[in-house]
Image 1 (cartoon, helix red, strand yellow):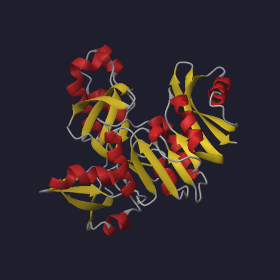
Image 2 (cartoon, rainbow, N blue to C red; image 1 turned 90 degrees about the vertical axis):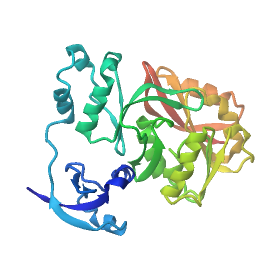
Image 3 (cartoon, helix red, strand yellow; image 1 turned 180 degrees about the horizontal axis):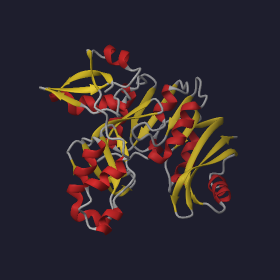
Length: 339
C-alpha cells in the first residue's frame, strides 16, 4: 500500500476546515480521510505539502487507503439497486461540487426516496451535505431553489481558475456554465483600468478581474444582501479587498458619468434595460461586456437592435456564446466599444 502525508485535524473543526482545504485543492481526493481518536487524518495532495505546513499543520506519514476505482456513478447505482427500476433510471449521473457540498438535479420520480438517495450520494462522493436543485434561480435577485437531502451545512468554498468563491448553495446562485467567461475575464488585460461590475453577485467576474487581470479599481454593485455579504468575504479571501469597492443596491443609482474603462453586465434576460446606465458610466473608447439571452437564429441582429435603442455610438468587437440557455436560446456576450 502506498503512503501519503497526512494532516491531523481535530474532529470538532473538521466540518469547516476540510471543505476549505478541499476548495484550495490541498486534499488528495483519491484517498480516504481517516480517523484517529478525536482527530481526522486528511491525505494531502502531492506537491502541496509545503502549503499545508505553512498553514500550521504538522504532517505525518500514513497509509493511503485508496478509494474504490469504480466510477462513482456505478457505486451510486449499486448502493441504490433496491429502488424501483424507473427510479433507478432517473438517478442523476452528474453533479456539482462546492467544496464538500454536492448539488444535483433530482427527477420527480426520485422524490419518495430523496433522503435515502441523498445519503447514498454523500457516502459515495464523500460529501458533508447533498442538496437538490429543485427550481434553478428565481426572481430578480437570482435566489436558488434548493432542498437539503442529506446533512445540514450548505455553506462552502469553491476553487475555480485560481479564485476562491465562498457561498451558501441554499441562498446564492452559482452559474457553473459561465466558467469559460470567468476564465476569459481572468485572462484579459485590464492593466490600470477602472472597472464597473454592474451585477457582481459574490464576485463572479469581479474577483478574476481584480486578482489576475490588473484592474486598478473594481466597483462591484450587487442588490442581493446575501450575495453582497459573500462578495465582501470573497474580496478579502482572495486578497483584493483594497481594489474592490463593494456597493449594495440597484446599479441604476450608482453615481458618476464617463469614468469606467470597462463595464461588465453579467446578467441575462432583462439586461438591455440596463444598457443606458452602462453607456452613461463608460468612457468614450471604453468597453461594455453586454450579456443577454437571444434566439440562436438572428442573435446578432437582436443584439444590434438593443444597442441601437440606447441612441449611443458603438462598435461591436466580438460576440461569444457563453452557454445554451433553453431550446434554441443561448446566453451570449457582446464586447462593445463605446464611441
